[in-house]
Image (tube, rainbow, N blue to C red; front, top):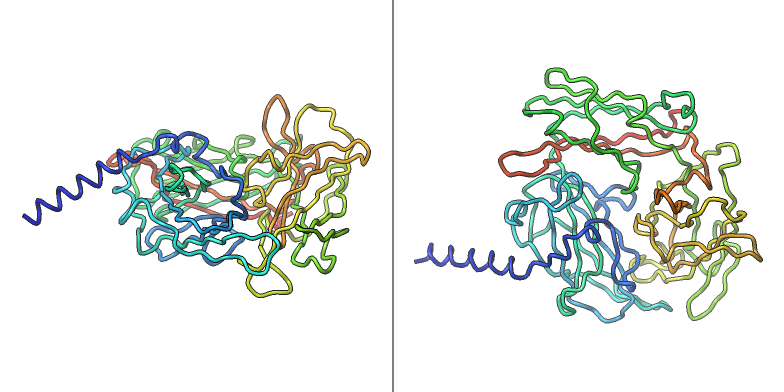
Length: 428
């Protein structure tokens, strides 16, 4: 009788999952880093140990990811989250949650704090996972969706991350581009993948390579085919197919204090919400390359005069100004980095001020230390690029992440079995 009840219980759970599934969550709009509720701010998904790295953990390693965000609605909500497994190309896989998770597929976020002594009130939420509610049983790409079950399951935001099982040896190297025309403006990535005790049927069909430049989800090279196939080894050595425009270093500013003018702050207006004016930026593309230490586009919420960065750092309006004549090419200019959720956001679009002769915009940001850059999106291609503003220099310090997926014929999904992180810092 007990066994019959268990079978019935599992059937009810599966029936509930199918009935409660939200098909619109699986559209392309929700399979990327995206915010759908304008009161969500400072949304970060990082390794537990660091705010300045890729959201990536090893399967069964005890490593964890930290998700944190602020809600400018000062009422604590019973927000929930769900985890979805994706293929290598970020489409939803055919796996059922019970096949890639041990535990519950959807859970509540129970850890939150109210802001203290700030002009802008907010609730700070935090989630560490995997946790006692679930663990991962399969490697691959994942999406976490946070939503409000009391508002017809309204999606607040989605975030991407990876879980890998290190079974392949991935060798990666950076060098200047091979062709003379791009030698001083591009990085070339060469790879060697060793399949030691892992079998594949067809290296062209079964293996997928993805190379990301930093945390830029939009700047990725995929679908590379091996240039040489040896026994248990795939070699990817190209002249052009695996090259990236090198870009330039990220810019920075510091708003850890609104009492003092910190780095790159020109003026502060104290109001119901403080307003910070940064010194104007100038294009770097017409200058010689100049190195300085950046944090690869990330940011760290912080406040100088208090102790708790999570709940005592305030929100301020930060004004950006790029001194630049109007672009001849048709398109739009955006602020970009972790501060824009690693995506092109309409709120971060700059408008041209003819009187000041600059592109300008304002963003409501939590106090802290920030990196950012300018991306121009041409009207025709819609491909974001640093080139028009800051140029491309092979000396630029860039991190590259290499991910190797192998298709699993038994379960029908892409296993993430090999990773490599390499950097061009100090190489040129």
